[in-house]
Image (cartoon, rainbow, N blue to C red; front, side, top):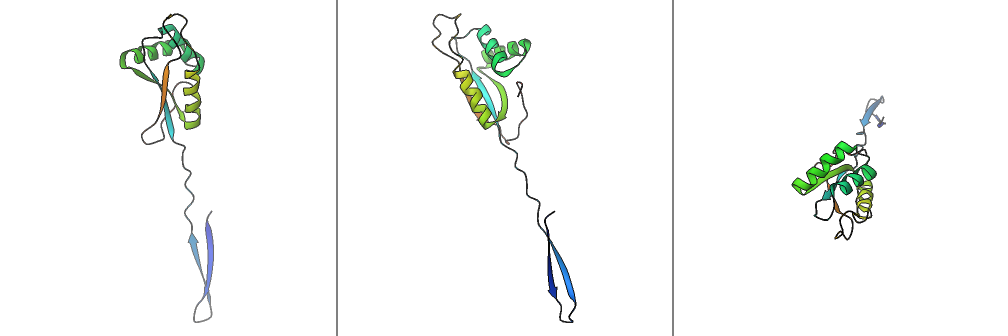
Length: 127
């Protein structure tokens, strides 16, 4: 792969060949990012579940579990993916709009992205 030959003469007139082996280039894996949905009191379970099914392709039972988790712990990881897609998914959450079932709801839920420690996480949520 990365071998080069270096020929040099010896004092006796013969030629000796040295091989230099270059290290193969390391392929760097893209860093992984979590899309995190944050809880609030202005969105119903139905809204959260519908959004998760629509944007992330999760099943209805999985969307219910995720809605319970965000309600209980204040946040849930929707998916883990590369940065550009995480940014897109965050924007899609922000653009999903208000919950029509909650009169006081003024807009979409809040989502953030955060880099996975170690950078090379798995994949969740249909990505």
